[in-house]
Amino acid sequence: MKSGFLEGDSYFLMSEFRKDPLTGRWVIVAEERGVKPYQFGEGWERESSFPCVFCPGREYCTPPETFSIREKDTLPNEKGWRVRVVPNRFPALLPCEPVHHSIDGFYENMSGFGVHEVIIETPNHYLDLADLPLSQIEEVLSVYQERIRKLGEDSRLRYCLIFKNQGEKAGASLPHAHSQLIATPVIPKKVQEELTGAKEFYQKEGKCLFCSIIEEERKKERLVEEEEKFIAFIPYAARFPYETWILPQRHSAFFSEMEKEELSNFAFILKEVLLAIKAILHDPAFNFILHIAPYSRSLENYVDYYHWHLEVLPSVAHVAGFEWGTGFYINSVIPEKAAKVLRQFIKDKKLGEKFVY
Image (tube, rainbow, N blue to C red; front, top):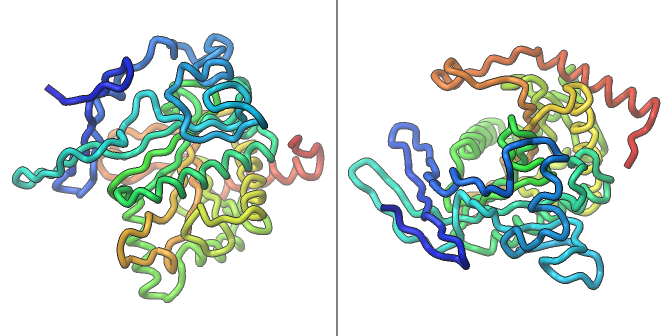
């Protein structure tokens, strides 16, 4: 029987990490994640889910907030917030002291220590992140920075991943605009693969691979949009139709070090990209993933060779047997054509009816 613990009226099963001896990939075994609260309902229509557990006035439906941006003279866990961070009600990992780290032959596991939070992006149940005014998007991004910095104070954590699942097809359980944060005591395999590739390129060429990609994509047909401090493009080897990456023009490994002016420019280009994808693909489900350098817990220096970036992945294709079996991806839309469509939409918007911020 799995062990667990009581918190208030809730009983939480302990999750754990298990390491695949063949690939080195860590898997989180979290039985609690399979349980869904009856309040969340089965439908995906915004009307049928209003008010939801994230709506103002229902703060009691979530665990106590860990951080929020609020109107003046309002109290925590009450109305008056603009962005609110709460522990995930059904977390993949738990911020408890690690119970074990053991090896049984060639099998390795450790307790499911970590942090799993939800960032509620707006009090308005009916707006998506792309629909928010720029000032609100900036606040959401500043909350990302704050939580990354704060969790970095815990020396047991190695990595902090911020991601967004929008739409049922992309894995979201609620339509109310939100993103998530999971901080782990190990570096995820996909991030480690990026770190390894970037480091090898740096050792060979003496420069950042991501900076080199930026220079190349600026001249190519895969460019979606370029702003003063950021660039958006569809990767040369995009895995999915309309997959779009956003990178800072300035070399930077750490998202949390972005300054105010850069934050504003990032909010601007992020809104442009999300609105373009929303319009062209008829409001698709999508994920976005923020890849940043790990917390510095050793002599390893990520500053020289890693470059933080955001990956936007519309859910317009399915990963099936071939992809699972080979690691190859079949992209049914040529990246250059997809970029042209998005680029033209953004250009037309700027020349005609301007974005409403």
